[in-house]
Image (cartoon, rainbow, N blue to C red; front, side, top):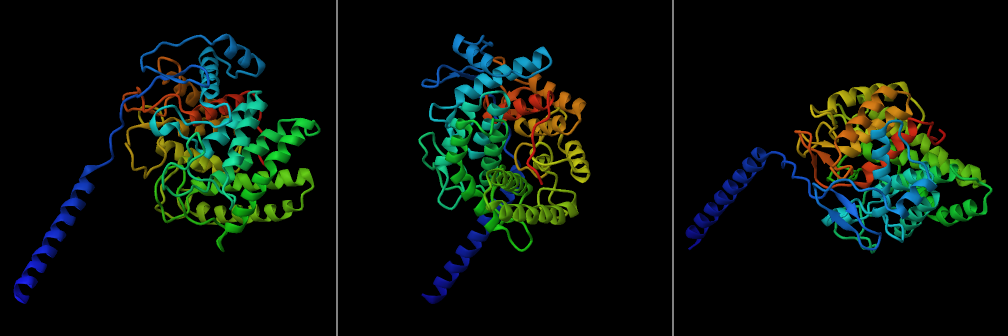
Length: 422
């Protein structure tokens, strides 16, 4: 009996090893999943009843209500195509912003959730285009989603429920304070509405800045965690460190303007983080992780204007990263080691380069990116999440983050955007 049991045990172990080997070889040869087709061409309807627009639906003129809203603000763009792109992006953001300020990434399956990062960028885009009340509505909603420790979950449903068990992403604690600062500096600081709005948002800014300042390690960097790539990682990434630096600087500047003593503490933390980024990421050319094998990452654009002042070494890294990540179809990959389809461009990353270039005094480079984005919209005129190798829009359209980044880039071609003080 014992001999038979041992033979069975050995056979089982061999079977398990073979199964594991086959599984490993299969996953190794499987490769990245190819990009799926365009799922929707846009969204239409009032904020209470959004409708998915077919992928081949033609553009529609704005409704009377949309036209009045557009006219109340500013539609950027110095060419017909760019202005048309800006107008459609603004209309799309307005549709994706729910009455309570919740901003969905898009309006299809899991895209119809709320990411703090996307909402923060949308609030900044509303501010830059002359819609500060809409920006404040979005910021209020984000403040209401904040966890007790000053952080945000990776995403929420429109009802404010956490839809899954994915790990929280630290970048929200940087993006939201930066967006509040961006909104505030565009307002009249003495206006009662401005003071009331900041007072309402200040507890969330304080909690976020305190959390980030307290999380910095001996290296000056925050702990490892997932970022906008939405993947697991055991290393700190530029996609987390850069927005946290912008958020700390923004929080410190707001505190200084308010006479809050926390300004000194947050400014010191921002200096520590800045030194940590320069020391550990800068040593390797500002790659995705602080190592020689980190690979280029589009997040390098967030280390410069309008999130920080100009820096020659960062600019050099942005130029090198753009060269490495720009695909034959003209768009940009998230990063060199991106695990997705290596032939498909992502529009938020492409727009981030356009924003950096526009805000950094590289108008020709910004124009090329913006014109590429305008030329790769859906028939409806919306900006898609991705552009396939053959140049066709893919995934979903519109994507709120892309629309916001494009609007900020277009405004930056017209006037200087503010950057948090060092």
